[in-house]
Length: 281
Image 1 (cartoon, one colour):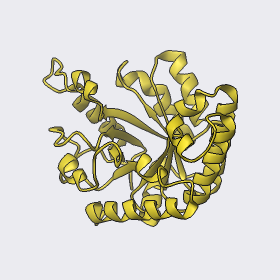
Image 2 (cartoon, rainbow, N blue to C red):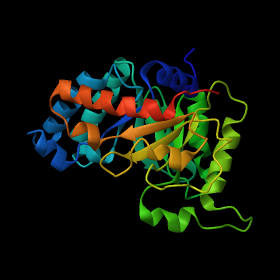
Image 3 (tube, rainbow, N blue to C red):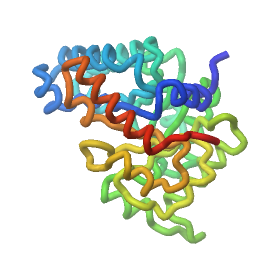
Image 4 (tube, one colour):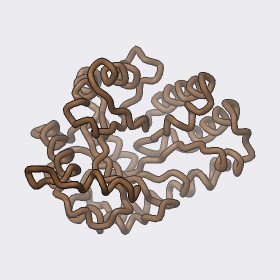
């Protein structure tokens, strides 16, 4: 049997180190690599990233929107990239931020977590703002197929605070309610739960309790978005054990040279190890 996503992530972080690299092929990045802004450019971009990093990092996070903007040919490139990344042994976190209700969220779950789907990834990102309970079909699919779901909690964009830090009738913020519900899904799971959170690395002291999550916390916003590895201590305090730092442009801007991409990755991984070590339960 396939191990649960949490167990596979636990092993990947231990062997490859605490790092997620985003694949965000936006037009300016393709241009800086000398590539056309079309499906062929996407394919060449992904091939280089996979060659450089597929066997070196724990998690790679393709941003689905940058493939979808090229229509069916772009989605075909995404399908191929997911397959090649998984064959290289790296965990694929597909950044789709889907959220809906009923049969629609079940269809999203089937599209991204069912092994029969060409878009099947190891884990996906999800939006809880129709209620965390609305994501139940995703959680069920993740359990059934040994996948993972990372739910938005405290994001880096300044507009997010208006909703995420709003206080509900029970005195908890919306974000704390999301954190608590995901913590319940992971309760008692060893070595690591399969349900994670997204907490931006640029937000400073969160003022929220992350101590019982028992699952991975994806921390985007590092590098070009302004946060440094050292900022992780400010954001997460003593809850650093299963933080997964996520970099994108900081590394990808060093392409298209494979050796330069690898060197940039080694640099940021060393910075993350220095802040996050020792990783212990």
